[in-house]
Image (cartoon, rainbow, N blue to C red):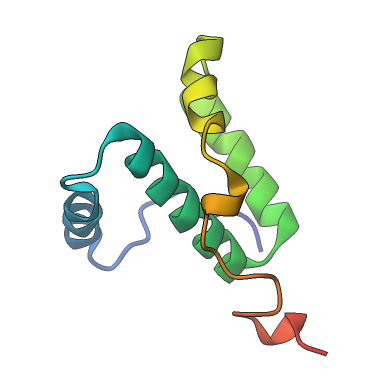
Length: 96
């Protein structure tokens, strides 16, 4: 399954509004932590390493990081502080 990069959301504007609303009132650190949790949940839902790596590559090409400082603010979010599912929690593929 290749990465879908063309518009594909059935209610894209509604989702964007909900995303902005979810960030309302969050400071920058909490906003980054929220984004990290959301990314991990969606990555778990996708579940395909090849698609996820393609998405990382596409995102990097779309807006390359111009300085180390922009990366350092994201790296301050501790993985332990992210409440995301473990591989077996949300997907029947992960269950024995």
